[in-house]
Length: 256
Image (cartoon, rainbow, N blue to C red; front, top):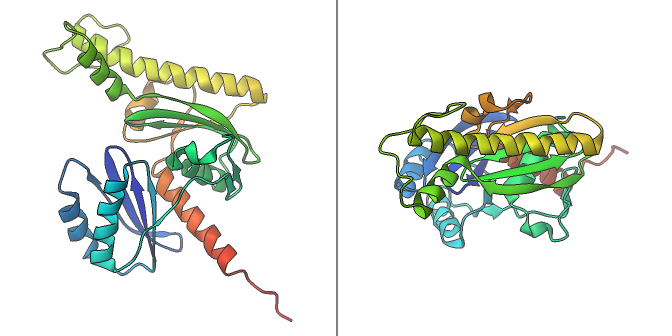
């Protein structure tokens, strides 16, 4: 059994996996008492033989999680960093380590599931977009603020755009609260559609559009293109990485 960790900007997601069976899973927001939440959840679980982590947060939070894992399971955390090529995926960046490992692992999960060619959209604190060909070549991508971060940025940079009530997503808004919310969500939807259309023209095909992230379900009905949710893509990519690494570390030998 292995423990998989996805350290995102807003929260940590985890899963205990035995082979391809998901034994348990959970999440903890950074704003809560992460140590207490994880310790309580993990003490009820079995002992993992391996702990793999993917992180887009700072070293201090990684160290905090390492300490909790060591206390509960007496195991080190093996942090996955973005390589130039692995698990059938080849990164387009000249400096692969600068590509977020969450984006890399989402592509690994999609490729392993046979979903490529595809466009992957991660909708969270940041919006990330990546294009992946059928043979695992990463073409590149885009990064922009996510819809909630867009709203926060707008509120922080303007004096009079201060809604006094929560807004709703509308096609055309007739008040400030709805206008802000609708503008930010529709801007994200439009960028995803534009990127997917450009990739389709460049590749001469129609790539599958996959959405993941905390705000993916809210965004899905706003899109004018066919799309589907691909939940827990980082954790699923970590599981593929682990299985591939284990096969490479312990190759099977043909019988003589």
